[in-house]
Length: 322
Image 1 (cartoon, rainbow, N blue to C red):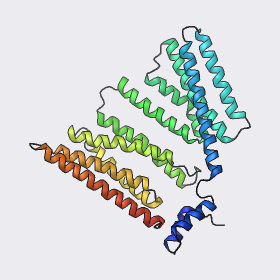
Image 2: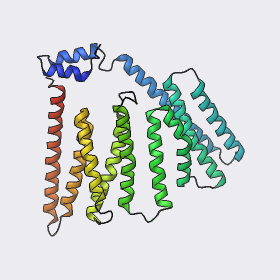
Image 3: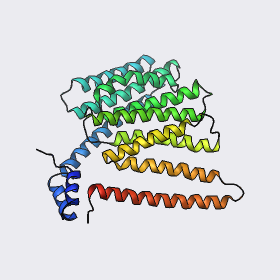
Image 4: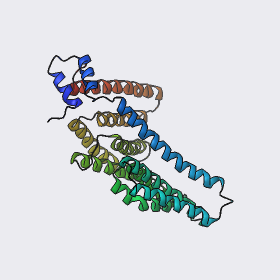
């Protein structure tokens, strides 16, 4: 039997005289819209995640408050015992998969706390890049096998942090454009991999917040790279940033049109608007006030046009609800 989805209902409405009020009533009746049970489930998951966060925060504050009075073996022993208990509970408990994933997330965070405590005790440098590198390598298998989106986000944050600290502490002479281009590549690859796995049904679920966060994490660096290059030196990376932006932005627009995802059709044009506005301001010479006025008018007009086109596309895809 064909599953009735919101897009299917809007498609039927676009080719019939089905009124908007009736569509809304039907969507609530068929539980396409979130109902009371859905909100209760959301609150349960939210409170569960909040509780896990408080547990990890409590552990960190406990060690911070009692740091001077505790022996180093007691510090490491308590942390390792707690990490072992939480991990075993995540693996062998009879709770739901969501509860196990939350416990595993707590284990990932406790692993970082353990590395930090070890670094502080033996003065290995708890803020060095190798701390985050060791943390990343220690939890990567948990993340891969759990297929839990928050864990993937934590792993990606660890990878980005490791690279940034490695660049600032080891490779100190790398140009800024190279740094942001590599950050763009890391997050763009993560977004592409996620979208491909979702398209091939390897990853289940309808939640799209993770690929959107990773897409933003890719778009922000490449936008910064293009803007900075206008005020610095185009020859630093020989225009590589523009080539990367052209390829990925075209792919993002194509993917947004193919999957009917307005997110990519919104953030990519907005990034282009920022770059063009920065280019207009860069042209400011003897009369900067006029240039700033032109840039302001361009931003206002282009954003207005972008919003209008997004609304038009949304109505075209989902039907006009009156």
